[in-house]
Image (cartoon, rainbow, N blue to C red; front, top):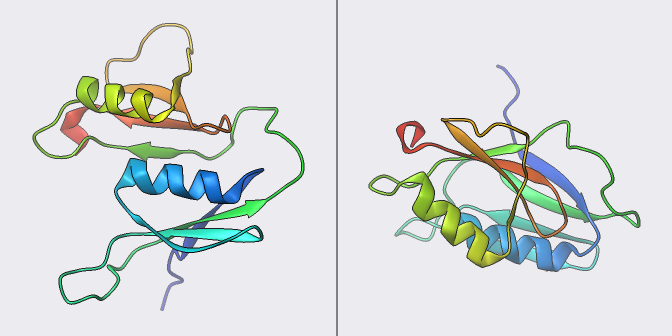
Length: 126
């Protein structure tokens, strides 16, 4: 049996703020939180069971992010929405655009409040 993807861990300075920000972006829930770490998980189903899939784990580090991430998250707009609408929502939540030169037709690059890059894909990926 192969291994399964359990979590993605994000180093950050303010684990609680980052967890709440990403929970709001994804419409997930903060499943655990303390100054030592926080977990953001998909919402529960109608029966109260947690939906399967990896979680985001935020762990504290003393240093600020200084270089480009080697791994990043790709987000897709929900069905029936488009990239521009979702981009405006992300910017309203505190994301910032990251300019990489020429705009790309199928994704935009953003950074979360601590500077971690992520992409917003075009609606065709949703």
